[in-house]
Amino acid sequence: MDIIVNENPTIVCVEDDRDALEFIRLALRNSGYTFIGVTDPREALDILKRYTPDVVVLYIMMPDVSGWDVFRRMQT
Image (cartoon, rainbow, N blue to C red; front, side, top):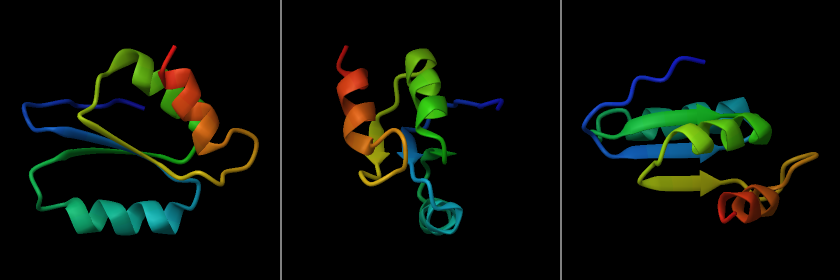
């Protein structure tokens, strides 16, 4: 995935439900934020290694890797 990061504050949202992720994207589309939506928590960890977002929104109950797991890995 290619991500274009600009001067706007960046939000990374990790949500395994594509419809919910799209709803969040639509709600924020005119907000001035750079929105990065990710459905795979492992991919989110790779993105968070490369970028420092202003906000990270984690859905807690995901299969395999939970939002809590992502949160713990972000702290190391």
